[in-house]
Length: 106
Length: 106
DNA sequence: AAGTTAGGTGACCAAAAGGTCACATGTCAA
DNA sequence: TTGACATGTGACCTTTTGGTCACCTAACTT
Picture 1 (tube, each protein chain N blue to C red):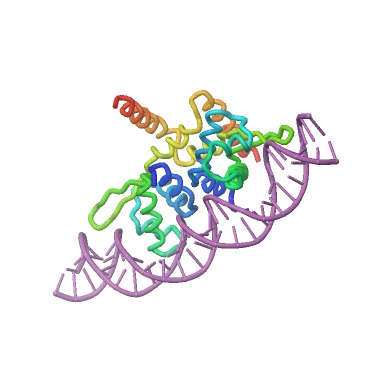
Picture 2 (cartoon, each protein chain N blue to C red):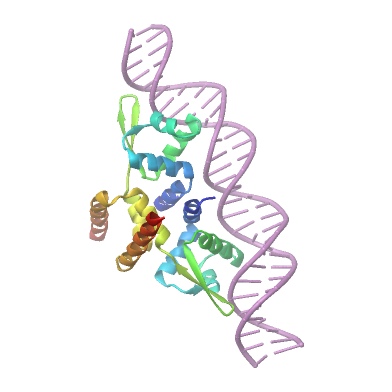
């Protein structure tokens, strides 16, 4: 399995995206902390976290018996750069900003 | 299934990512053109294209009996914005640029 | 009209992924 | 050192996904 395959497969599951959201909101969470936020057994969460690690989307630092998790944004940026070149980036940004603006108005 | 679920699931398959790469390189290809580039039966490719359409990653325009395909970069941009805020974007960009620079040197 | 070309549908099967559990290791605290 | 806490592993089953095929409709060409 290639690197980018691991990244995309890791992102394909909603539970794993939720875990990334949690780490985006507050980094340095332990595995137990993450488990508490997800409706699933401990084992399921641990499995998902492992997939995220192997994809390089999450990096860990050990502290005693705890395992602290951090979001790594680099693979996300590489996805962006794969299909959005510098030239069209400006147009897309404008479009997305417009989308946000319209949603705020409602 | 939610919108973003469709997008991430669509990106999870290597054949579908190849199709996006092809459209990124040159837009407006017909289904037959895409089929010719992929090692798979016509039916398999058509199925993959359908998944990309339903995710909004590809938009189509009909011209007679042909179906022309175009890459839509907006969902990709939204993935980026979900986990990379404006604040850290500069750091990540610098990191990624450094990565490219190092790879060019070899 | 007849033949050819472009594309669409539903069924089917094999492979992969998601989730749970029994069991195991290592770390802290009293 | 005894017990509680944090995490890791491999087996197992169910569901989902990827790919192919037989069969179909619609449009262009001559």
